[in-house]
Length: 154
Image 1 (tube, rainbow, N blue to C red):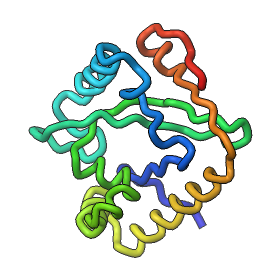
Image 2: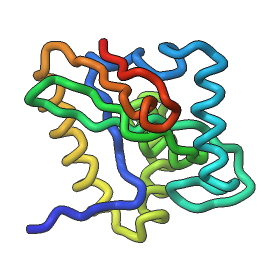
Image 3: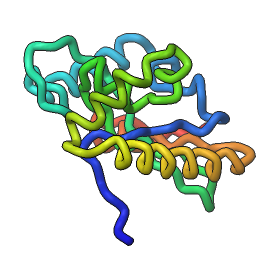
Image 4: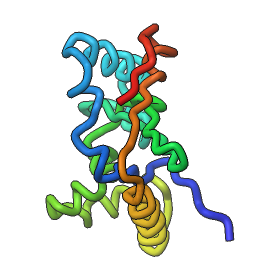
């Protein structure tokens, strides 16, 4: 069976990577440059759902190399608050707003509640597997490619 790919999907960060984000790692002026670049590329639209005229938030996209234990920055995108709530569904669930996020996931992706639950199950499985990595290294070499910075590792 082929796994469905969604335009808007969950990005569950391994527990060991919480509290390590670009905003906290970069000087404020550098973070402003990164987020403003994402906003400029978005041209006033959420990069997930395409809505225009909404307040945009900067969201870091990460890939995880489980063999090497490396969390790899792949992009910073501009998203609306509704899409950001779906992306960070764990936080959204803790805030008691999962139903609204589920509705938005289904609307943006044109899918059913069963599809939502299946995607959430896959995301939770990946999260549990990634949590077995004892310590993650941080690779922000994307910054060098985008902004001419040196490769960063934690």
